Every structure is written in C-alpha cells, then in structure tokens.
Image (cartoon, rainbow, N blue to C red; front, side):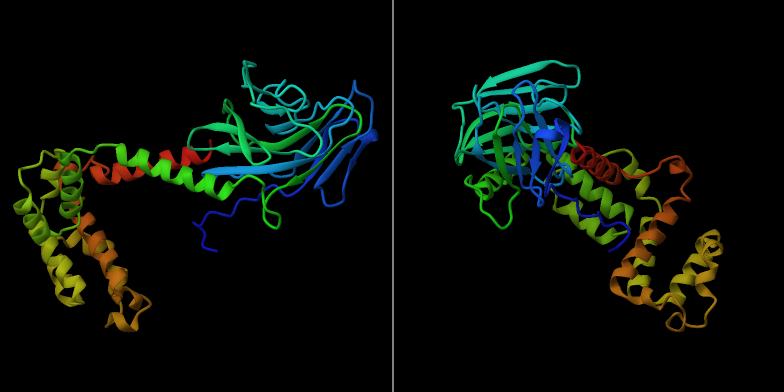
Length: 349
C-alpha cells in the first residue's frame, strides 16, 4: 500500500459488554448474539468493537428480536463509546421497542424525541442506519423505514444495543453473508443520486469556470491553448488579478515546455542557463551524467514525468516574478485545497 493511500476502515463485526451486569449477560462466542437474564431494574449495554465507517454515504445494521423479554424495553441505535443507556444519555440515539419512541441527545444534553410509526417485539427485524447525505439516523422495522431523527453528535459512533428487562435476547446482522430485510443497496443508490442532483443544482457562473481554465493554462505555460481559449470564448471573462501576473514569461515557459516534452534536454538546459541561471544552480545535481538515459533520473523521460517536470519548471519561473513573490498559489490551486479540506472535515463528521 502506498504511503498516501488511506487505510481501509475497520467495520463493526461483533458485540461485547460495555456496561451493566455481566453476571446476568450472555454474549455468544462470535459476538453476534446477546441475552440478558437479570432483574428489570438493571440491564446491559452491548456495543461493537469498531465504530460505524465514515467513508461511505450510508451505514446500516439489523437486529433480530429473538425475545422481547418481560417488558420489551430493548433499545437499538448508535452512541459514542461506552455509554450506559441509549437515547437517555448524551451523544446517543435509540429506537425503543415497547414505546416506539426514537430518542437522541447531543453533547450538551439537549434531548430530541420522535415517534416511530410502530413498536417492535419478538420476531421483528429492526434496523438502524446513518444517512450521511441528510445527516440523519434512520430506523427500520421488517424492511420498512419507520422513523428518522437528526444526527446531533459527531462521529465516530458505535452500533449499540441496550437490553433492559429479563430474558431480552437479540441477534445482530452487520451485512455480508446474510441479506438484510431492508433493501439497503437500493437506499444507498438513492442517496448517491440525491447527492449528485444536489451538486448539479449548484450554479457556477461562466466567469468562474472560464477563470479557472485560464488560470490553469496560464500557470503551466500552455500559451497556444490559452490564446485559442480566449478567442473561442463568447466574451472576455473577468478573472482574478493574479492571472495577469501569470502571463509573466508565458512565451518562454511555453517554449521550455515544448523542449521538455520533446526530450530536447540540452536545448532546455541552454535556455534556462541563458535566461534563468539561478534555477539551473538549484537543479545542478540532475545534470551530472553525460546523458539522462544513463542516470538514475531516466524515468523522467516518460510522458507523465515530462509533464511534471515541465509544470515544475513553469512554477519555478513564475517564482522569479517580483510581482508575485508573496503569492503562494493560483486561484485554481486554492479552490482545490479548499475542496480537499472540506472533504476531509466532512469525512470526520
């Protein structure tokens, strides 16, 4: 795996006891079943070993109610790590069997209560999921969504089940080998379509899109493409002031790009020595070998690497422009950095 490649998130696979009475609790060896046999005034909290994944549009798990017990007070939902009573403590939410209530509390203790369309009991299949597009928790019964509630606390969150009354017993399905009663794949696809439509609704003025294209062509020395783009545009596009600065040495940067892309390295070096001697001094180690094919840098002759080198040379020349010494990046680069930062923050939600 490459260093910059994100590691795959560990997903929930098993339950274990995090609170309540261990004396009256049974958890199967595979961690997929749990039962509480103690008195009604006590209870047990079962939680997964890993939190719900964050790098997906939706997450879902399902619980088979094997026995609703004396009072049917099973609570199924999500919580932060190591809570005691789902929906009744901060940073937790739950769908409660005998009342049909969906309860949630944020980090400040503010509680939200919604009513599901139905209660649940022995034999029912109850599901709980995260909708990252709408920022909601959703709940199902026997394959049908019965209620939702806003997500009021940040991830990571853990699938959690609380057994409150005697003889309550459940079996959990985290997906994979056993199909859900709820059509989660269809639900996830509908979210993908919804998200794409929301993105498509975002209007971007022609001046912005034209400005980004111009910025790119200018910055990396595509002089002919820049002139052709300007000619083809129906009207002049107002773009950021730095684009006039990016025309600095545009023709020279274009010529150097062409020399690099056609592997005319000697001519490129000569042009750099003549016009930008300080840049050659910074890169002198690259030219110690008589021919680049015999050096450790021979891979630079590939098309991809030549593009990278040409772009780097164009950037280096721009850095010699006194008018832009303090300018760190072009508008396109700033947009992309902001986009990456936004995605990173969104993924940690």
